[in-house]
Image 1 (cartoon, rainbow over the protein chains, first blue to last red):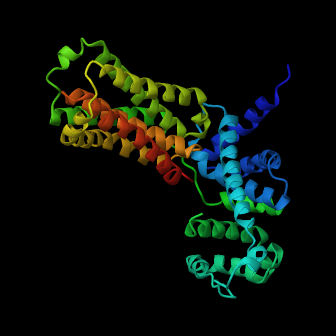
Image 2 (cartoon, rainbow over the protein chains, first blue to last red):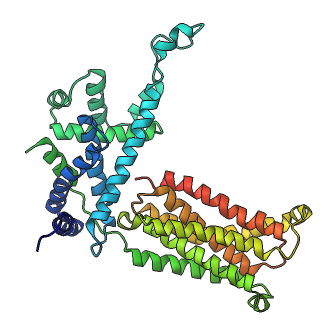
Image 3 (tube, rainbow over the protein chains, first blue to last red):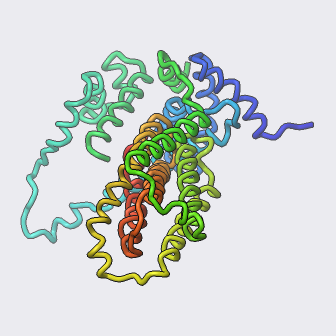
Length: 184
Length: 214
């Protein structure tokens, strides 16, 4: 008798989910490591850019970790996992398309049609600075390095003496906070 | 160790996961809140005096049955919405929509014996407002409980969960007013009972999208 892929996934994930709910960090870690390839394959069906795929996969892993308490051990794992992955992917796609819609209006293309300058030459992103002040010092440093100084994650981690993954986690939390602050 | 592995181990470090309250327990708690709030408020406001004779009217019994069914299906659907493993139930959504419109049809049909007059709308305004306040009072307890509980779960369909929760609460309110008030004109029923139910469901949808996001 051969087991289907779904049965195999159930057999793999269920004990890990139950153990992770029981407060075992090692099981939670293993669970997320096993979810990662599934989530990557799932996200790649909709998004092609590697960096964006990584971002969405990280969001899915965060979501799985945050929603872990709602899994009911007597029920199958895969529908639960599929629902969480779908929810996060759709959320990411919605944000992505909203962002693309904004980017489509390029002011330099319509500059010739404007009668006079209605914006200052150097825009003062006051609202952004205000939102930045709400971040912790570490988060501000990471954002400052990555955006003002245009440094990569590796360069930022070296400059600030943090690990690469810490920079990623800090940046992710900072984006989340900024998104909330800016009402997006 | 790869960066992704390190990221995952940092993510899980130091955060203990406690299982959420089970679906069955949330259902029982919600049912208790509904029953207790209904009994207490009917005790305060009093049950309509013609209830015994109304129970012989098939339209009234059908309306009562559909109202109870709407409360049950909307409530169970909203609670299921908080558990990702149970959230994708298209048959529940279809049943809810069918019940909602069936309830609306029965409310309308049960009032067809009397003519629907614009003058009634004007005349029924004070009583209608009182009805609306009563509906909101009956709805407040179950709505507060369900929104509080769903906020602590992980809804993958926040809008649907919000709309179902609000529909359940308003249907509970309509059930309360059905058992409490009498002598309402047809126009009053449509304007002060069914329309608020519909509008508050829309409000619940947008509220759910905001407060059930995680």
